[in-house]
Length: 332
Ligand code: AMP
Ligand code: TRP
Image (cartoon, rainbow, N blue to C red; front, side, top):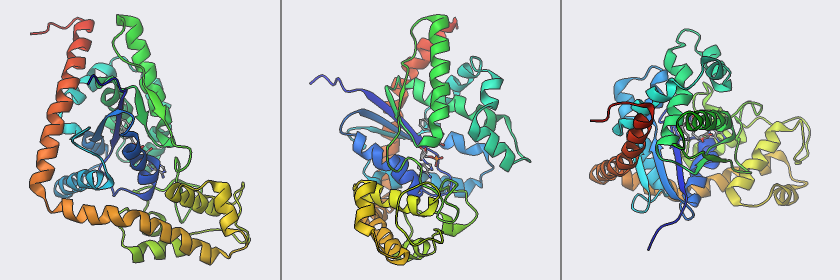
C-alpha cells in the first residue's frame, strides 16, 4: 500500500540524562506521533561537542540514550532511529547552510546568548552555528513536522527562514517544516527553581528527575520540590512551583489542569507532592524495565543503529545531492 503519511523528524542530544522534561516535552510525544507520521528520530551526537566531552563517557552515554529511546517505545521497524554522526550528510549540509545564514541571526538566538553567558571560557564557533546543524538535520529529510519543546521554537523558526531563503534563491528545494509543540509538558520547570526550565545540566541534582531515577529518588526529589508559602493548590501566576507540579501531573496522567486542581483542592502540599511522585513513578516503571532488558542486548542495539543509518543515509544523500546541484557543484 502506498504510504502517504507526512514525514516527521526530531532529535535529542545525548548530554546529561533524559530528564522528565525531555520525556514529557519531547520523547513521550514522539512515541504517540508514530501512529500518524513516518518518523525519523536521531540521537544528535554531533551537537554535543559544543561542550567538551570525556570520550569514554560520551560513547557510553550515546548508547544509553539510544537504548532509552527504544525503551520509551520508539519502533525501529516502522520508523528510523539513528545516530546523527553515522550519516555524514548532516555535517556536509550544515556547511552548505552556514553560507546561507547570517551571523546576526545566530547571535540573536536565546540559547546561544544563555550558553555563551554560562560558558564564557568556551564560546566556540560550534556553539554559534549549532542551529545551522539543527536546520541541516531537519531539511535533509524534507520533514513536514518537527516535535520539540517550547525552548526550541526559535531554532525551528530559523530553520524555516534558511529554507525559505534557499528556495527563493534556487527554486523549490526544501520542504518548510512546521513545529509541533505539546500543550502540556512543553516546559517542565526545575524542581528547585520553578522559574527556570528543568535541565540536565543543572548543578543541583534535586532540580532534575532522570527517567532512570529509582522510585525512591523520585519520591525524595518531589518531596523537596520548592513551592510557596501559601497553602492552596491552584494554577495561577506567581505559584510557579505548584503550577509546575500540576503540569507534570497533567502531562503524566492525561487529566486536564482544571481536573487536577479539583482532585487536589483542599489537600496539603505534602500529600499533593506524594501523588505527583507516585504518578511519575508508575509512568516510568515499564520504561525502566524495558530499558534494563534492552541495555544488555548489545547486538540488538547495534543492528538497529546500523539499519537506521542506512535508511536515513539514503534519504539524506538524495537531498544533499539535490542541494549541491542547485548551488552549481560539479556532481561526480
Ligand atoms: P535537549 O535535552 O536539549 O537535547 O532537548 C531534547 C528535547 O527535549 C527538545 O525537544 C527540548 O525542547 C525538550 N526539552 C528539554 N528540556 C525540557 C523541559 N524542561 N521541558 C520540556 N521540554 C524540554
Ligand atoms: N537542539 C535540539 C535541542 O536542544 C536538539 C536537536 C538537534 C533537534 N537537531 C534537531 C530537535 C532537529 C529537533 C530537530 O533540543
